[in-house]
Image (cartoon, rainbow, N blue to C red; front, side, top):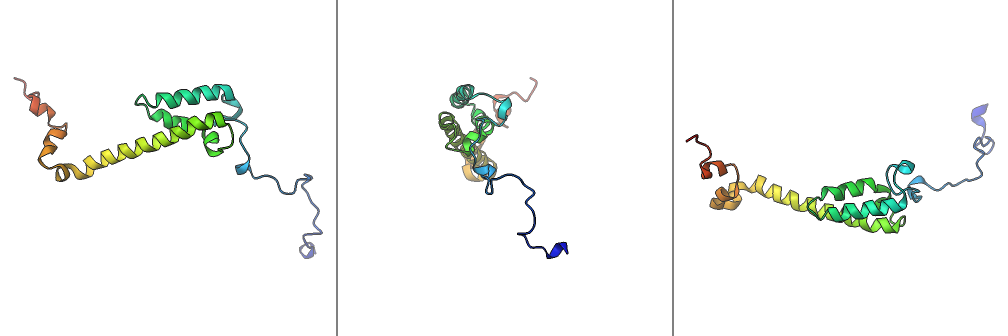
Length: 139
């Protein structure tokens, strides 16, 4: 008997008058950090994002990755927190460029090696540095 009822006859158990709620993914975040209300205020967030961005240029590009991770809500929703978004977006670009350069350098030496560099390879590698400086013998 119950199965023969149509959807229009089933009572609405949800008393909320809103029929089409805004999806959570499209709503702008209320907090600039991944910590939510436990994190930083907007003013403190601007200061931290600026510091992480600037110290990333001091050969600490992992701070750029930390900046992107910590301020992920700002990076994900570009219209929210425009003062912070500037620093976080540039940190993301900087970390991406740094990672691409580091990986290309590492893979060049790991894959190419002596076949790629030829006789210059002996001057480039560090594992024979002790032999060249005479540090392997005790006398």
